[in-house]
Image (tube, rainbow, N blue to C red; front, side, top):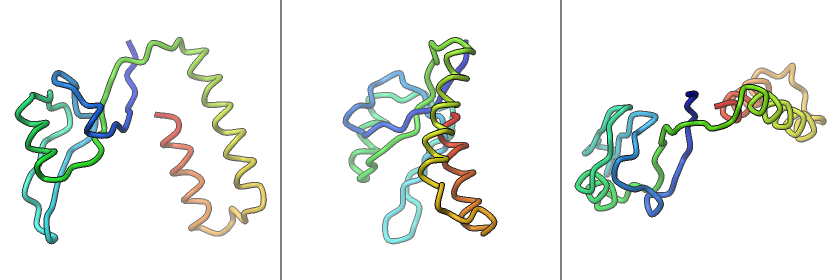
Length: 108
């Protein structure tokens, strides 16, 4: 089955979910807590994240959509993004980079 990433607030995270990206929490610019991508969350790790003021986590989960549904969703996301950026000069590297980054994020 295909997987996809979701960003969830800490209040929605439950034991057994799996991190889709590494987690690094810092206080005063010093990293004080890290977990690798693929880490299965436990009650203890969720509590530690909350105590260190972690707000959102990237979670990997099964994607129940078919290939056709994923392709249709991506087409809709791209069409919406094209409308949003319709007045932007995508020859400007920063704007083009932003457009590509948002499109890549929406295709996850």
